[in-house]
Image (cartoon, rainbow, N blue to C red):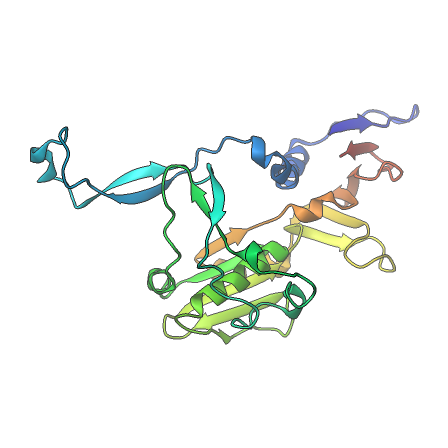
Length: 277
């Protein structure tokens, strides 16, 4: 991608404010990271408990007395492969009502269920199977919010299905809007919520008569989306996701002034900056 400046002869050059560049940089990171994912070398690690060998010719028995029954070893969870998991899936559309009807792959033509029987295996360790009982004990009295687009919504749906082995939640939503749901687990005083904000910042469809959710969007980079920011303070954990919507046609605004467009044929009259993807 590259910036191309359009400068009419009668217009002076305009410098892009640093805060504007920072805002667009954050948005672009969300947008291009999925494309670069296979090329990135992640350093994130997961601490995995492993049993200490019961006997070893090189193991110092004097050290064993001072060590716990397990030791912690770091594992790069991003380096690995998908392997068959015959025990999966742990839930389906028939066993979990949280999955929406339009997400029923089998009903709408998927000929098999083998695509669900896989698990991620890091090269250096085994990921423990998700334990819903342990999870609910950890988050007892807490709250968690999934903020973003449909990826966040799907994550919350999956969490509801996984936790259904322990308890089904009750709907405690403040609104009937399906894009803003809250669920509570009474036995654990744990609340989950999903807040719809595909661009994270305030956005608006430029043409109300255009195609729904696929037309041109105006993004106001210096304005928060109050639909979620006004509700998020009460939550202990916040999971943000974004990226899919940043490939759509967009015009960026700062202080209500257009300064960049993702459309070659639609220029900002003041700055005339076009971003080519």
